[in-house]
Length: 142
Image: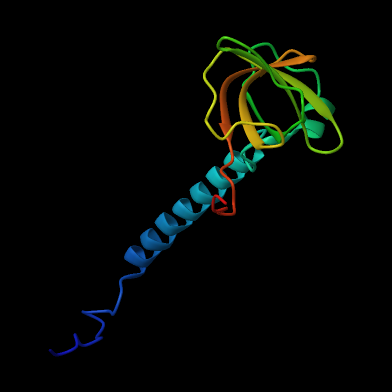
């Protein structure tokens, strides 16, 4: 394959075409940077959940705001009545009372790590979904 000669009649790359290519590339880069900045500036965008301390330290909750909180279930705090369950979770510093009327996973128990999704009224967290972390170690039955 022969290279195209670079004579005045056949320049390597026309200046106008190069300018369009650079302008188009610049628009794409600016758009990507803008989207990344917008996405990371949104509240809660950089983390999947808040700890109980972060939830309690946050400004007054907006009505209907959806939150995800993480913590360990406080031993002896689980109170079940049918499907309604009330329990307390903590991150070691602050405790939050959680209530839910949804079924809970089999791995939910005292001192298990959970992520709860729902609304917070400043006192009680009402969960619409509760996820419990699976044990990280395999323990054989004795």
